[in-house]
Image (cartoon, helix red, strand yellow):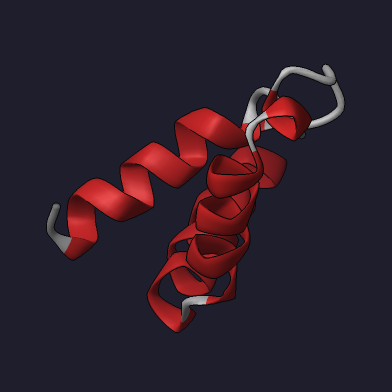
Amino acid sequence: MGAVHDLLMVTVLRRLEGSGILETFPNLCAYVARGKARPAYQRAFEAQWAVFTTSQG
């Protein structure tokens, strides 16, 4: 997978955090952790968060 695919997949998998489902797959937990640590992911997340918080008023 390419970097863009990784960023998108990490975003999707993060929706499972706290549900207990993701934790049953250690490989996926490690994949998400690596993805969240990437500077490109952090920049994209921060940019999206800024849009979200601005639109919330």
